[in-house]
Length: 481
Image (cartoon, rainbow, N blue to C red; front, side):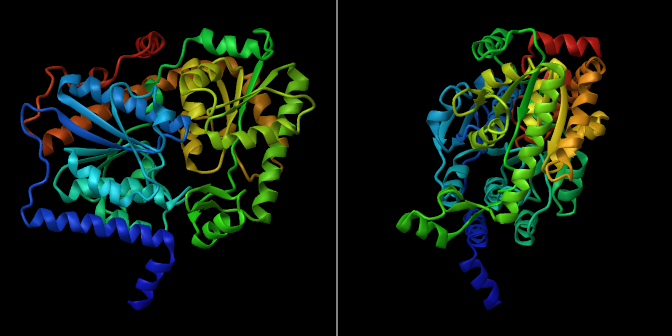
């Protein structure tokens, strides 16, 4: 027992987990002592708190929350709803999430979660990588902590379009303890199996980004023309990442060294968090970038394609620049620190071929039928391409001989782009149907918790539980009804 307590005190991740769990337990004690929390009352707006990872210009996270907001408004009605979202940096989300109150999320988040969640009638956890240790245990502690705060007070708690993967033992215990009363709508069946083993209630769903409407095609076209594309040559877009500096872990010794002597600056992620990095990580990253660059060079030489790099998160800028440095001539880089999500997705949809290690680069370009090759670091892109029946276009970031295997997959995708255009677009309506069903399941959970909430008088069919769709999505739905 003493060793367990020492681990909690000396391991920052475990300390964070322990702190969040203790705050949830304290809220439960208050509730048990009849200190009535904020409750929904018939006739008043439903106050929902959106727990997420926005404010770092991660395009995928931003798109997900934007579409959750639009779907909630469509289902519940503006007059019946008050939404609050947390953000690391309100300046970076200032033009996103219409009419949603934004509150700054401090880096030391457990006290904030414990004070903010009880002010609302429910919590919607919005992050896609909701339950996994791959990137950072802190992210799951944040999402699970928000859901746990709602559950302990008998309020609405829903994980929306979530994915689950491998978790550290302490993190699994945390989720098992605090999330069993939540409903987690998973975006694939493997995630349901992971959470089901922990006793968490789940149902099937999909990602929330399928309904996203980017800027008009002319916006992306103009940006590309401005940077040298003639509008005729094939357009190759590559979305690289650094897959090998995760997870980010808190390190108090490195934090002190950074502040006192400026050490470990290259590894610093944020606050007390540092990327995992070693000589092996550097070798693997170099092999990945050189594999992408080699395949890109060969494809450009064979097709006269115009090459563009897109960074879907600010962190991706270094990967884009490292790739471009290995090309015979410079290529433009469009990164989310300079371009908003509407512009970036507009650019992606012009691609003749997309090579991506970013899941949402693939999802948001699929309505345009873009031919795609996925180079994946985890199960997200793998699940997507396998669900589409295109596993031959899937590679891993650490695959031996990546460059050779990648150019083979790129040639195949480009040669079959007309077939892929048809098949990819035909896949989208099924995801829209799943997203509409998620809305139905969400409403059912809401009415279970708050039976007096006014329900719209519409048929309980998926198309009535989607936000307004762009004309091209409407046409897709009609063509594949």
